[in-house]
Image 1: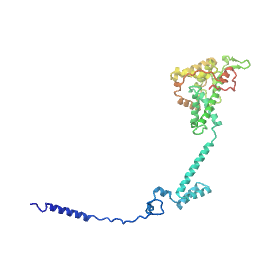
Image 2: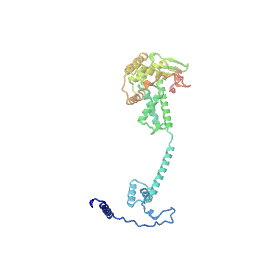
Image 3: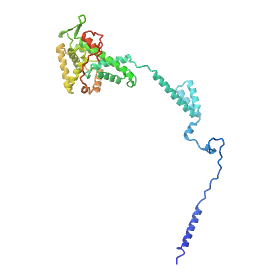
Image 4: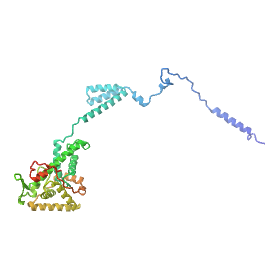
Length: 371
């Protein structure tokens, strides 16, 4: 016989008691009163009602709908404007600006930005074309001579001397407009001026060497001077540095001796080409050895003294400007010796001053266009 506390009847009674206790602990939640939605007959949007206007505006719309600046803010801004020394009409415009709502103020600011953009465009359009100023031309002349008289120069013709002069101008910013390297037309004008000044400098150097001969223009012949009548190397070097900041150094005398040696062999149209080829040959023989290169230039100096007059040359220290040019050339053309190649000699165009020099008709006005 089963106990009264273990039979089905007890189980049912316990379940019923538990269910009744759970129901007594539940707090009824009152339902919100129903309200009929009133439709706005004047609204064109179906289903719109008055409740939608109770929803707060998003932050962006709230900022756009902001009203004029407060009185304190207006006074503070006006005082700041006076410190900036704005004109009276500008202060009036500022007051009107502060009294506008934020949307209008932002619209005015954007309009002013567009107007400023138009003004800048007009200024750029009205800028005159670049022209080489007298000061810039003077600097180019000075740097061109310094480059041609540098013992570090790998070749006298071609793009390399032009690049060296441009690098010096760019380093010092010598009367150059900002960003000129990004304007193709302006760079073309500047490059043409550099080429012209290098041509004039080469012509001057060649005239200094060619005075070892006397041109008989009347009979159209060239008379060779006796060796005793030649300028010695020191006197010739003085002609090269006259009017420049260069000084007579051992390295410069070596270059001048090489020029005279090449000129005696070929004073005609291919003089500068032969001179560049001689430098290439000397670098090939030296194989990168500075001692070997210096020995070759020293031999040229001694040979020049034997042919054109023995003289004790008083060497000077390098001028600061020339030293700067030498260092810059040495840095920018470190691999020029290994990449330079021998160029073929081509006949110059008609009227080339090298030909005029060879014929004795160049004179002081001759311009070397063999560049």
